[in-house]
Length: 534
Image (cartoon, rainbow, N blue to C red; front, side):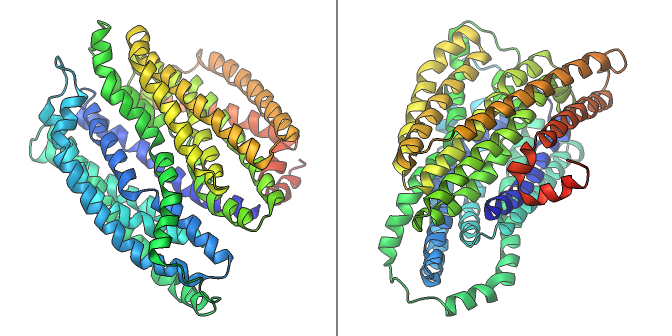
């Protein structure tokens, strides 16, 4: 289990820092381009994310599974052969995807907005899509290389390259936007179109980082290659067939969230108009960009888990170590809820302060954020359950279950938005994800004959601890209202720190006192806590 903890910790740390930077940069960027223009950013990135997933075709996770499988059999030659071929393939798919998105920019823009759109024009959206499409040339190549390292259970290159990619992207984005607006007297919309190019520049930074790790680890990998057992001599055609078998479900795993957002992108504005709801504010921009960025912070743990789970479960499943698979499932379900739920509850209760600090005082923005945040638990659960299906060779169910959930989202989205506006889109997302996750769990339960009363008891304990924490946070908020208000961003930040600190202390103390933290986080945390009397 230490492999899971270590791999997840490395990936989660990298993802955490990357996500934090990905939220923090919005503060100065939002200030530069303004609330009326920030939504244009997400009109470009949602189609880009979908096309990126198709370009990568699930390659990183599928490749890590493929490499882990043959490495566990002592055959290092097969994985190296596929690396050489796969990098070339990713270059081709990246260029094709770039051309497709670039050429489809205007048709996508026309489908996205309604005829009486007041905020953005077709050309505004199309230009932003064209600029972001350049990243597709680089990212697929880089992503497959990450998958190779993950197949060796070496997560550091992925974590560090993601962090460097984000840092380079943000520096270019903020620097470019500042130059356009303040040095060249350009418009905020021009700044946004220039800023989306940062995805390509950041990817180049990530690629250089991966090359550094490759030079560092190449002698070790060459030694393993020299001591490899006789190769299974799998033909490239057969390897790609096997990769495709792994990759197609991972495509859906990777684009699950963008697909749900894409449904909103295609239906939201028209549904609002059909329901005679006047949009004086870009509500879709709040839902799919400003609020969504904060909602995805608790989800980062699930992303780290899903990337670390697949090669680990694949290894145990290939060796018929079913007890180890079951233990991995037990720990995964508990840890994901143990760490995600308190973050969601705390952020929901502090939604006013969070939206103020990152953006501005906005009753609409903080209300959408508060209603949207609980969905983060579902966003976290789906990739974990889907990764488990991938690890136990039940890939087709990822596709089937997600398509059913997505179909429900598409079917219910328009009427729910007409009736409940933004809350309708959130409810449709909840219904779609709940159905998909439930079906994933049914398949896992039947395939592995998985039943665990212990996990049920632990989840019940986690819920009780979070309820106590929520009460403590509620009383802390009410008490602090008499001392510190929300007159400016600094005071709102102080409120977040103080109230969040109360929640963290209460939850941490109860987790340690009940022994739950020690059981879930392993021997290392137990050695540390014993020094403090827990």
